[in-house]
Structure formats: C-alpha cells, structure tokens
Image (cartoon, rainbow, N blue to C red; front, side, top):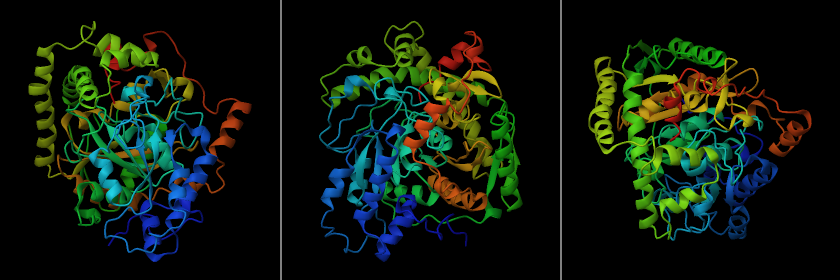
Length: 530
C-alpha cells in the first residue's frame, strides 16, 4: 500500500515535522507538547518579517504547558493534542480579535469560537494566533494596507497569494503545523500553491460556517492548510468527526479529466513545464488521464460567479455584523477600509447603489440558471467519463513581486491582472460548488512553488483526499525546509533583499489596457472576491 509522502524520514528540527509526524512522535513520547510549541515559537521569532500573523500567543501557550502534566495522557485515535494551529483572522477564536484584516473590526472580540475552531480545541489543538489576510478577503495577493503585506515563504520579495496568505505562510515556514483558511473563489488554494503546501477547499456545507466573516455565502467555506495531504486529511477528520482513516487509492484506479482548452491555456512557461512533467509522472505510474472538451466552461463560470459574489457580499456582511453585536454597519466598515483596491471594489461593485452593482434580476439569473448550468457541465463530464476528478494547474503564474501587490503581475514577460493569473483556474470549481485540493507539483529554477489541483464531484471530499495521498506519493515533491536545509530565516532574507534590491523584477505598470491583458477590464475587476 502507498504510504503518505514523507511519513518515514523525520527532519532534524521539530519545527519541520509534518503534523502527522509530530502526532506520531507524541504518541511514542519521543517529544513533548512543550517542545513542539517552543519549536514553532522559535521559528516565529526567526521569521518576524513574514507578516504571517496579525496576533499571536505563543508565550501564553508555552507558559500554560510549563508543567506538561497532560503530556503523559494517552492520545485519542484522532487527535491534535499539543499541536500549534494558526487561524485566518476572519474565523472566530475566543480570546482573539476577529479583524477580517480591516481596521474597522480591530476592536471586535467574539465571545466564543466558531464551530470549526471548537472542534479543533476539543481535539487538543493549540491555537497560536490569527493570521494576516487580504482585507475583508477581497483580493488574491494578501497585500494589506493596515496590517502589512504577507511575504511569500520561499521568497520574501514576492507575494504570498490570498486571501488566506498568512495561513499558508505560517504553515510553510513552520510557525504552525496546520492552519485554517477560508475559500470563496480560491483563497485557500492560491496561497497554498504559491507557498508549496497543501490546501483543501471542502464542498460547501461539509464544515460549519458559523463564526466566519462572509464574502459570498453560496461559495464560502473554511478549510484546512498543511504541509502534506495526510496532515490535511487529519484536520478534516477532526472537523467532520470521522473516525475512519483516509487511505490512498491504487494509481491504476484513478481517472482524472484534463481540460486543455481552458485550464492549460496561456500558462507561465515554467508552470507549463512543471505541470506537464507532473502529468507524465502520474500517467507513467498508472493514473488514467482522459482528455475533455468543455468549451462553455469559461463563459458559464464567469456568468455564474461574478453576479453571485457581488450581490451577496454587502447583505451577508450586514447580517454578520448585526448577528454578532459588533455595533457596526457595513457602511462603517467600508468607510474605515485601508486598502485603495478594497475601497474601489466596494464603491464601484459591492455597495448598494454602486455604479457596477448587480441587479436583483441579475443575481437570481446567476443563482437559478447559470450556476446550475455550470454544475451540470461538470457533473456530465464526471458521469460520462467515470472520472474521480479533473486535474489542472492551480494558478497559471508563479508568485508575483510584492511591488505588484496593486493588482498586476508578470506572466511570460507581459503584465496581467493578478486576479486573472491566480483566480482563472480556481474559480470554476468554486462557482460550481465542487471541492478542490491543491498540492505541490514542484519548484521552478528560481525556487518558486507551483501547485497542481484536483477538483472532484460535490461531497466527494474523502475520495479527493485519498487520491491526493496517491498523487503526493507519486510526485514526491520535497518539503521546503528539507530541500534547502540551510535556507536562512525570513529576517535574514528580508535584510538581504533590502540591501541588494528585490530578487524579482517589478511587473511593468503599462497603460490601463495593458494591466488587464488576456482579460477585459470589466472581467478582471470582477474577480477579486476570493
């Protein structure tokens, strides 16, 4: 039987253990929870320039384990006992503010955990802090004008991706063994891919969504991020309450669709090379790849997603603010927004009466006609070809420069909208209500992470994770810290970058038209709800 990748070899540093490795070591009592917390806290101090956290509580947790009295208690079969877990700052954690990355909510402190967080606590997880994010989840870069930018874990001169950028970076740098993010249009999968980790967008409804600042309830879901598929599967077991372990599938039993006419068009050259090499390895190992034609995919996804996202944000946030007694209206939060990109999006597309807002009729058509048509398109392919999923590059470009946080990144030496580069491939599954799993496909010559995604049928999350275990074993992409044991801490890299100049070339701003190359201005502006 295939074993989860990296199950055997233990890194020298506890901070580099995977979640499942750390739990196994605790069971064997070769390490203690206090050592695990101390290792994550040390790594956090070494990488203070990463921008991963808005608030952290390592010292408090370490003090609470001063006597380690619970360390000798036997662990439950499905346990996160003593594991440092990070949480995106739009998911309620009692004892922390829930800012949603925006200054207007900096004083909001929910009195109780979201259900997802309560289940993690009940399994013994230690919640080390709230992670940084794109303001109000309305972007894909994790540029944050108030709390600071989140820096890519592999290259601090580059973007982390978003909107769950802080959660991805915290995991990739070893500041936490897993993290919770949220995904509306790609917010878990994009930063997971760009930072070389694993991220699961569950089927909407698989995880409770209470206690989460919303964007678009039709598409919103919290989800786990970790270093390996086995780690993500463990967190999924905890949240869903399943006692059944997720096991790999034999490669020859896996059938994956390939939609070259959409997902593989216009890729960055290095992304193209890595993804096609990954597909070849999968095929050589016995995975069956079936070529698909879905010419309506792009149009259906666009018509279904844009209207729903734009129409739902304002009323969903109003309801959230009122239900949780924040004392604020959405107008108050909008007035205090720090990011110019976020303010422009709200003023032009999301606020009531905005010039490019969605009419009630447009919303109903998208929800009742376009979205079901998109969903049928996927389901027909799954059924007709007996597919377990569809395989695709998670993003069409690598992480752009921090200087491109304003909305433009470089794709094959041409400037394109960041929303197009990072959301184009993740949007269809979100808009159709499918689960999606991203895992590392490899690294470019410059060390930038590239992700490969599997989108599965609705409610086939466990099967998706089983397939992920197999694919991860076949691809055998090295972990970041194992691949570069002498990789210096973020603080050293940040100083070097500052002294020597940025390690990546800024994307040319160009004319307004060039900023949205390969996507119309309206289309590119219509995709920041992540």
